[in-house]
Length: 465
Ligand code: ARG
Image (cartoon, rainbow, N blue to C red; front, side, top):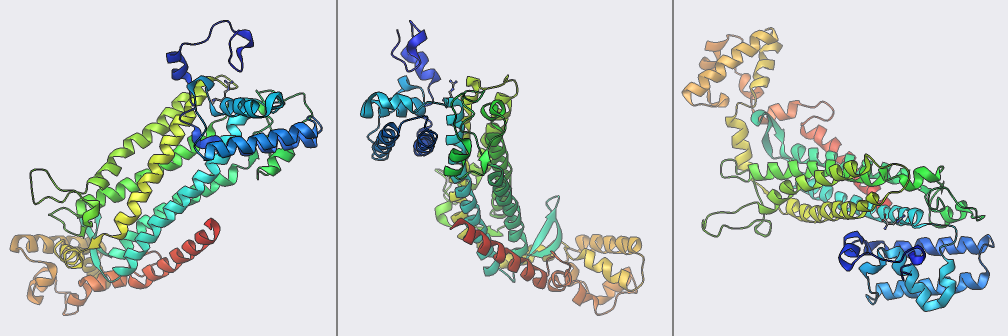
């Protein structure tokens, strides 16, 4: 007979190599504190319902606490032989307290146990991700405050479009990240039904009290269907999709930083500690870390793709395929969290070159729309105004001039509606200042936006304390 916990039925066991191939134990050690917490709640309930005798319950609790201490102290040995932490912890419990340890698993299965562990872990991990998102938001907010008056070109098609405040550009990422924060919140708000007690798939014939374990572990209620409960990995996929989308946001910011830090733009400069040099070209200052984040987006999307594919053909309820959720979820979480830890200080220490951004906006005809609007206000139909301004821009390109450098006669040659006040209307400051619509780029509108952002940060701070 095999010495495995499930060994009764077996005369042969997998080789060491095959055993390692199937084991998740070394990957999921982060679940240990949650496994102990779940077992504590379970055994408490077994006592409350009279399924186990009070002495056994006390003994098991003491033993579990002991195992918990060993794990915390780094004394616990994780062996592939034990397959997963659930079996390793139960085995060690039984070594410490004797046969009573074998009663802990009454009325549950590893199938519901691994789910409850994951739920508890995800709860903490998602909150940690929210904290890290807020850190990046704070860096963006600080930059927006510091560079409030700075004007830069806004782009479409990566061609200069209209002038905007640099603060407005940076706050665009703030709100993207707020959506990621909110998505995590709604993920957490739905992770409130306790899987424990679904057992292997069919529930149990022991008179367990699922409401007790749910309450003890901070859930609102037990899940409704035991088959669905143990067959479900939606929460892993959902988390991976939130992470993938947020990573896409971070990647876009990195791409802009890389472009804007180039010689040709010189809008921003990363601090030395977030760049690297070249082994051959002494002049280089490369945005390696931003590039790596952008590059790792592929991995991040891969985790989501892998999980979706892993689940697509699994007949109900639990199949071992689903153990892959551990590897993929932890890689997702670690990559996302580590990236955010790099991102926040990288953004915070970035310098904006206000002179360059201003020049680029001025040289890119970014106020051409304002010029057309000027003509419209003087009575010209917008289509005609568009043509006149287009011709003026062409004239400037030929003469190598900016709009502001034209003389009034040159304007008048394009349309006699132009008067001295055109110079005011095509200034960058006027263009930015005029866009007062809610959410627009005028200093007043951006101030409102930043006040709302500050409110969000205050609320998030209270919630995450
Ligand atoms: N280590 C397993 C996992 O993470 C736990 C569930 C095992 N259940 C089973 N029926 N073999 O998926």
